[in-house]
Image (cartoon, rainbow, N blue to C red; front, top):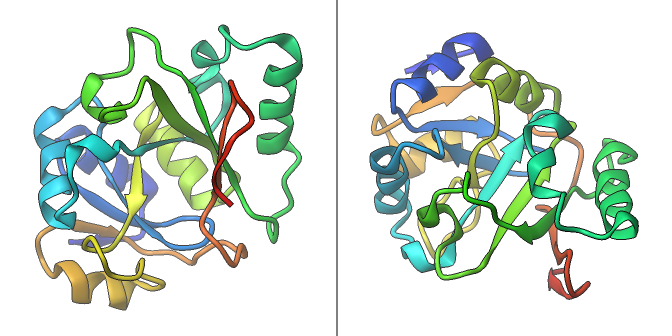
Length: 189
């Protein structure tokens, strides 16, 4: 199914469906992060091992604020600034943060930290807000292939095996960079 309604797309997520949607730079696959079967469906679609973990995408800081409490005030401010002061053409930043008991183990994979991004992409913000919190976000491609850059490419990869939210990619030319908030290590430059 293809929809242009973020409200309808959020309902599909709540029903345990997998959704493809445009993000800041590439198309993503998402689901309710608390629905283990929906998450397994994404892994099967992508042929992705569970050990890798996935990104959680939020539409507003308050959806992930509980994950910032274990950071120093200085690092917390750096993380928040990278999410709130980003221009649409700038590359988004995903942070590896200490996971708390609210984060399902399957989201982290084999890692002690969880990858989190607060997006400024208007469609993704609406989607997360209609959903009522963060969602899974992983690139829309089978393992080993390039992330989809359009609805058409995403459909070519996955056909009728999932739902689609129509929309445009953001203006960023690259997927988000990934930084470890505890060590400053650059995971993906």
